[in-house]
Image (cartoon, rainbow, N blue to C red; front, side, top):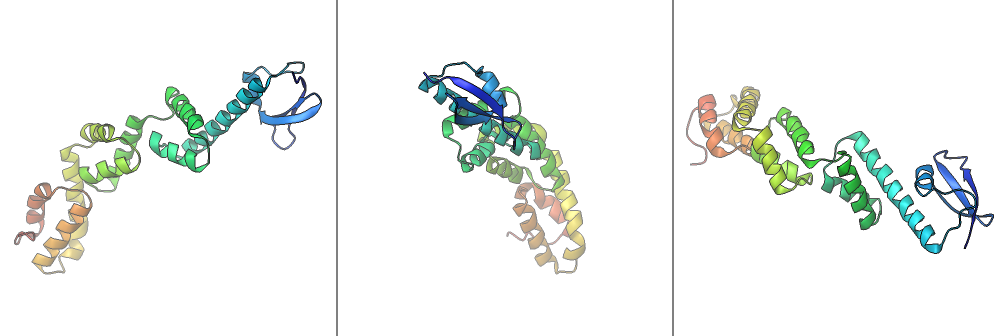
Length: 213
């Protein structure tokens, strides 16, 4: 079997090493992978050993890429999976990486949903819009619904609606009452507020007839 004759740190990237088999360059890999497989001069490697090492290198590269994404902001599991697929990592490698990240608590959809909802409330949106945005970000339906129930209650949604109404009033008051009311209802519904919730609030702010009747 081929024998490792040298392991040299690469000049351009000190975190990687070049492995030589029978005095000829064989492959490069991350130092962590070399350490994990216990590579050292004099060690014999079968073809199966080489394939396992290369698989370990692919997993290390995938993990490093995922950590780069996570260093910028938190991601849902599904969102991170899509990005890794776009980086052309194999599905099996990605699943191992995602499980490793989950075990380390670097990805946690419930916590991701909580943080996203915290940010969503600053954008003055309703519960329905918040739920849709979570699911678009890759949070599964039941996890997303649980997060909205726990971290974004009806009173908070009403507060958001009231603040949005107050913010919109100055420009709406220049319009006739029916048009102003219709535009305000449309704005609130696009932001994810239920009509039954906003109807009395709009009537208090602008009065007039129901624009949906």
